[in-house]
Length: 193
Image (cartoon, rainbow, N blue to C red; front, side):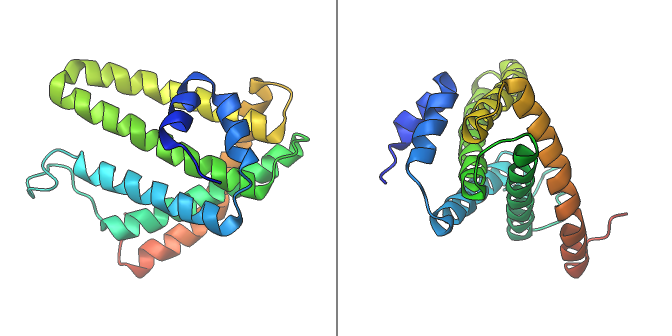
């Protein structure tokens, strides 16, 4: 079940459907997939907090109302709900993907987004105006990667169908996760106002 991270990452950018097929062929068990998801969330959280200008030195103009740990827990719950919502919606569109595949898929997308964030961070240092353009392009490119991988996992009829399943899955996941996140934030003293 060894995963060549470099080759798989490059394949995800060049041939996302084939990369997804290879990823799903590894048949990760749920425990491994959840660990993989937790790692991706932690890496994304670290990169988000580090790349905020002035955050590490305490001079940031952007206020983050919650700690990185609470933020990571919220992202983990939201991502897991998104995986479940995408699984349910894919089934509504006559897809054949499993919940475990959806967990692996969203975990892998977390990794891809982390890699993209690193690239954007380098360009923010070297060529700030280009970084904004790159961020815009990579946002849409990441959607294209996700839709291809989702289409591969559910064996849907087209990327348009995958888009519909993704949109509906996000809505389902959003509703499922909104209530627990509200209670979690309330427990840590963060008010919605």
